Image (cartoon, rainbow, N blue to C red):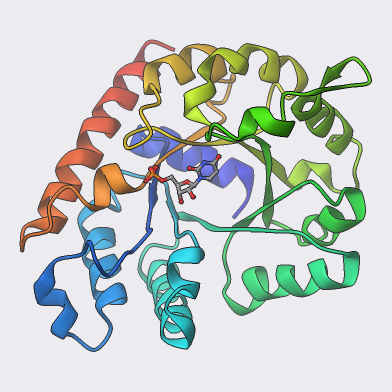
Length: 272
Ligand SMILES: O=c1ccn([C@@H]2O[C@H](COP(=O)(O)O)[C@@H](O)[C@H]2O)c(=O)[nH]1
């Protein structure tokens, strides 16, 4: 999917919501455990109930890898289901990969070719040659960690190196990499006060913003400081939506939570 197609979906749906599909078998409704593939059945119901309210789904691969080969099969079925039934949705494999060049190329093939995700998250720690293999894929997007939502973000990301905070160096340096137009960045919703500075460096890039909902980040604060001319934000909520209920009404309740965020987003977009 191109960036322009994603922007068109945001305008059409009046939403820049990304729903996180972080499926934990201990948290999903009991009745699904009797099915052959509880993870897929859960995702399918959530997707069918919410696809018109969001522009993106983000399975975090940890929640699938934790269940071995069966989990990976559930991930494959989930991405195929989205691509076949809702091809307008922007898909994110939250896998936080990155390694020496030839290994990164194989990670990129796994997520972009084998699984057909639109994007994958990567860690910037190994530098340019670990990220450029992902950027080489046309109409695919590499979402690089910049300033994460957790407390540990302050351990390294905000430390000063050569007179500026490391996350700023990551943003600035990566703009010069080959095919950098395929880059997006992760910035946590819990760090809303940093968005003004971030927008000075990457005024037009898409930012994937996790941390609204269960982690307490504020949607309105993020939008106030982080919204670009073309919106440029994908706001993620996972647990806050998908675990709204663990009864038979789980998909309905997930829709209600997604709708609350979509309505807030529509309000923000109308004032833009
Ligand atoms: O800085 C980051 C980067 C990634 N995440 C991931 O996003 C979701 C958030 O889930 P919630 O349940 O809405 O808190 C999850 O997959 C994280 O691993 C993040 O939270 N912060």
